[in-house]
Length: 305
Image (cartoon, rainbow, N blue to C red; front, side):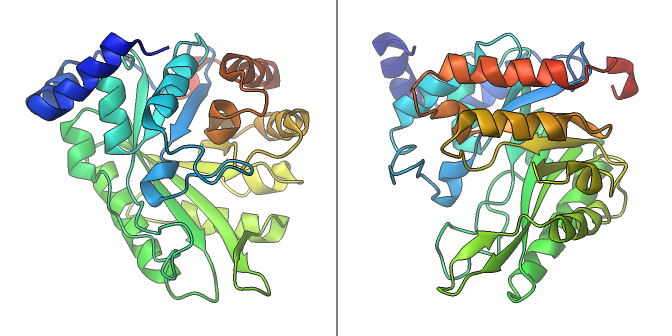
C-alpha cells in the first residue's frame, strides 16, 4: 500500500522537483541480466492508460485512478517472482520516485499514439520513449505495439516506425520487444483481435523481420489455441501477453501455461488480468501466474544473458 505520506511526497516532488525524476533514473540499481535465475522473465504491464485504454470488465474507468493503479503495481512488484514492469514514462517515473524499481527490469513503452477507439487507432505513432531516451535513462528495453490490419493503411506507418525503433535500439545494444497482433474490423467497424493460428503466425513472421537486425528482438505474443505453431514460426525469444482478462481466470492461467511450455517462450507479461482481478486480490492473482510460469519449463539463465 502507498501511505498518505508517500503519496503526498510524490505529489510534492512532481510539483517542485522535476530534477528528482532524472536523478531517480540515474541512481536506479539495475540487475545484471534480463532473465531471472530460473531463465524466465515475468513483467507487469502498465502502459494501457497511455493510449486511453482505461477499461477493465464493465468499468470503463477502472485504470483512471492513478493512486489506485500505483498501489496495485507496488503490490505486484513486491512479489519475489515479478522481475519488473513495462510502462509509459509517467508510470515508470512515478514508480521510480516511489523507490520500487531497484533491481527490477524496466521496459519502456514507445508507441501509444493509436488511441483506443480513435479513427486513426491503427496508425500507432511513437509518442512515448524513443531509443535515445531508453539508452540515456538506463532502461532495459523498449516495447512497441504492432497491430496489423490488412484493410487499414494505418498499418504501414506503424510498421515503418517499429522497424526504425528496432534498428535504433539494436544500434545501442538494447532489446526491442514487439507485440504483433493481427486485427480485423467486425460488421460494425469495431476492431477485433484475430485469434486464428494463420493470422498470428503471419504476424510473427512479419514482426521477426523488422529492422536492420533481429539480434536484439523479442516478441510479445498472445496465447492462442495452437501455441506450438505460433511460437514455432520464429527462433526469437518470446513472452506471453496476458491480454484482456476473460470471465474465467482459471481458463486464462491454463491458456498461458500451454503457451509457456513452448521452447522459444521465456516468460509472461500481464497487465489488467493481474492488476484488476475480479476478486480484487492482486497478490493472489500474481501468485497464481507465478506458479504457472514456474511449472511451465524453467530454464538455465545462461541460455540468454
